[in-house]
Amino acid sequence: MVAQNDGDGVGAGNQDPDTEFSEQDLLLGRKASKFFQIICVAAFVVCVIAAIFVFMNVPLDTRMPYEGKYDRSGSGIPMPIALIMSPAVLVLLWRTGNKPDSNNMRKGSRIALYIIGPVFVAVCVYYHFVFAEGILVEGGYLAG
Image (cartoon, rainbow, N blue to C red; front, side):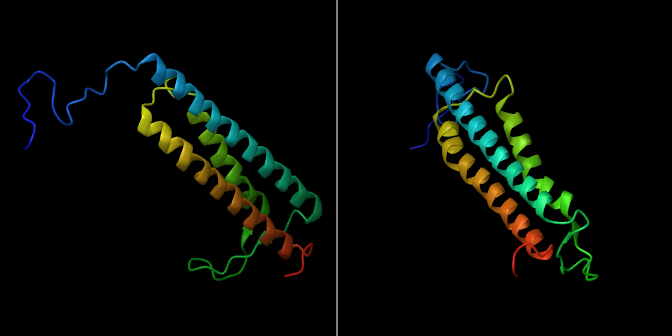
C-alpha cells in the first residue's frame, strides 16, 4: 500500500528539510561534530610530525617517484607538494565541523559521521605515510 499525500504534510518522504531540530538532536550533533573535529586535529598533528621527520632526514630537492600514465620522464612530484596534500584535506575536513550549522544532524547523519568520518581520516593519514615512506626511500633514508 502506497501512502497518499493529501496536502497535510503526512506521508512517506514528505519531511520538510527546514523543520526544527530537537534539543537532543542538536546536542548529539554537537557531540558528533566535536568528535570529528578532535580526530581531524589529532590526524593533522600526526601528519605534520611525519612531514617534519621527512624534511629533517631527506634533502629538500628530493622528488617522490612517479612513473605514471601522464609523465614518463620519472621526474616525480616535489616532496613538499606530496606531503602537503593530506594535511590540507584534514584542515578542510576540520573546517566543515567548525561551521555554525555543523551540529544540525539527525540520527542517520550522526551515525554516518561516526563511521565514515574516522575511516576517511584514517585513509588520509595512511596515504600520507605512504607518500612519506616513498620519499624516505627515494631520499636514501630507508632501504628500498
